[in-house]
Image (cartoon, rainbow, N blue to C red):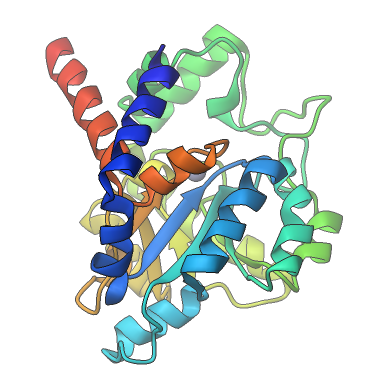
Length: 297
Ligand SMILES: [Zn+2]
């Protein structure tokens, strides 16, 4: 039902002509950073084919350099950056599409989950969306204690099946992918102690740099959650940018440690995808979620 409603909203948005208006007017001097997680190749290929006809792909580094230098004219009009979060094993199947369209997306990975048989805590079976949201509001220690008690989950436990990319896949992808850190275990950073937070951010950077032998300068906050403390760690740690999950486009005036994103439904059909490029469905959905949240408290 929820999906039906979302597709209905998407159809209305597309029929209204807003996607064209957003593309030709808003995206003239603003850059969209699309945020994916684990898209299937068929849906993703359709999105990329559509974008290749109407937008110009640029790398995250190109956007961040332009913001730091306060030099936007070098950015083509209607530019888009592709980012994919977490390091899901399924991302490997997207490699032929990256190559076909000559794009170099940024993959933000959790360095103590990739190349292991550990699991992402938010992919534990049987957790409802509401329960996950409640867990995100606990302190890091309370969340882990709860997951251990209720699901026997431990961050460094090995499971029979693999959820994340392994090093052989990452090395094969490295030419077409810009790998960047997304913490070690995907905690909610503002719920961590200072020591945990530094370990998750700086430890992740050094993990990835030693794993791939490249310098990592960009970060994305798990769940988009951050405070001033995380920004200070970014700056002190030598990062040049950090992407949030705040919905919107990026301009010359965007702070590099508060880059905005446009979350995309991984398996969106083309109508829903075109609607999501306007950000209307996502804003509507967050508004509805916030109504229920204020009901709870
Ligand atoms: Zn994530």
